[in-house]
Length: 81
Image 1 (cartoon, rainbow, N blue to C red):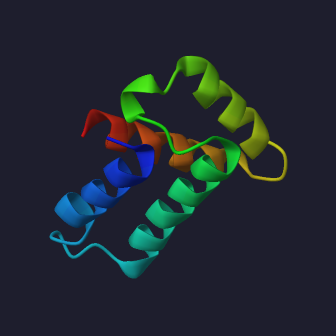
Image 2: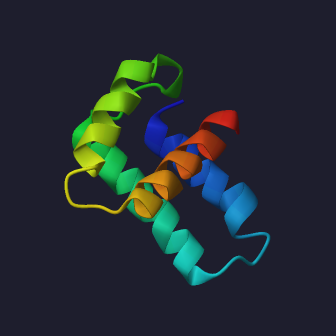
C-alpha cells in the first residue's frame, strides 16, 4: 500500500466516520502533502526511520515544535493503521 493510499484509508475509516472537525481533516491532508513533497509516494512498508528523520529535519525549517509533533503523531497513527 502506498503512503498516499494509507493516509486516504485512515481518513475514510477514522476521521470521517467519527465526525471529526474539518480542521482535523485539513491537518491530515496537509501532513500527507508535506510528506509526499519530501519523498516519493512509495510503499508504506518501505518507509524507513531515515526517511522520517529527513522529513522531520525539513519540517524543522520554518515550523514550530508543536506543529512538527502533530505531523509526526499523524504519521504514526497512519503507520499503526
